[in-house]
Image 1 (cartoon, rainbow, N blue to C red):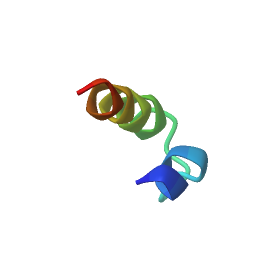
Image 2: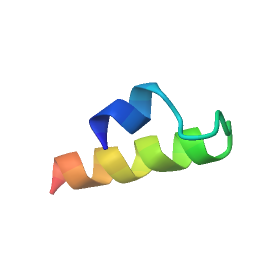
Image 3: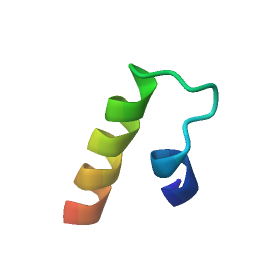
Length: 29
């Protein structure tokens, strides 16, 4: 998941922020 945060799977801008938000939430928990 960490490598996806820096390098999107298909270079999708809308999916990038969503993954970052999920990562932040997971990091907080």
